[in-house]
Length: 344
Image (tube, rainbow, N blue to C red; front, side, top):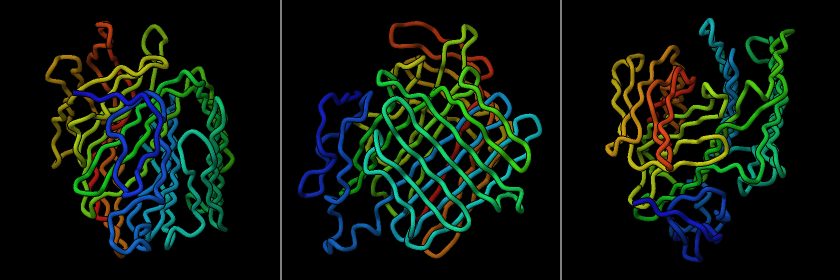
């Protein structure tokens, strides 16, 4: 039921149709979005293309995240920090008309994504063996300011969740999720500078490209941390838009290797997201309880963009079965789960 891709190709053919559908352990497809064909008027295609780079790092003390997104007729730039001990959170977002000044890389394995203005400077750079995240936002949190210099190790053997699925009739979703990248560097807020050590902190990337329906919905869960034996462990689970007959994005990450999972069910209460969530697989390979301790609520309602995200930070407990049959015990793994409704 899960089609694994093994051969490189362009993402789209000359008629704008997907060349391959499925998932892979490494990025294989060239994101030739210039070939997209879903409007009769070719000049309007770019208005519906959605592209983003979302980076996060989980430390024992806090979670830091920075994003560049280009939604065609608008762009967003946002940064947030959540303190695990106190629950304190601060987030700021810039809405950029027509995405002016936001530059995103063509593919996920090389190049730069940048934004520079008087308000903020963000630079994401991919090179062989590492990702670099730089942030400078002087006015963040009423002038306290925030800066970050992070390096996330990504050796060639480190596998990631790459997926391409159709959204009938002519739309599609192309995504790469990377978990468990050892991360070093620092994050500075005002005069407080937190040193980030790769032995204790893990980075993640959500790199998305595609064409969605105007009204979209998804649920996504992710975590990167350590087992009791010090192995790195990660989760990427989700459902929502698109035809997942060929592949889901559900995986267990153990050190640098992907262990592919099939369909996963989410049992949560949309009227009370702080209640425990239950995640399970019909084949018995996954059985987890997620207990939230902090809700990040992000709403946007500007012109054509209407978005509401309930991103819950909490801890996972339960078990997941690896490909070889090893039963992985999850005990208090810090991560998040979110429900997102969008009209964009």
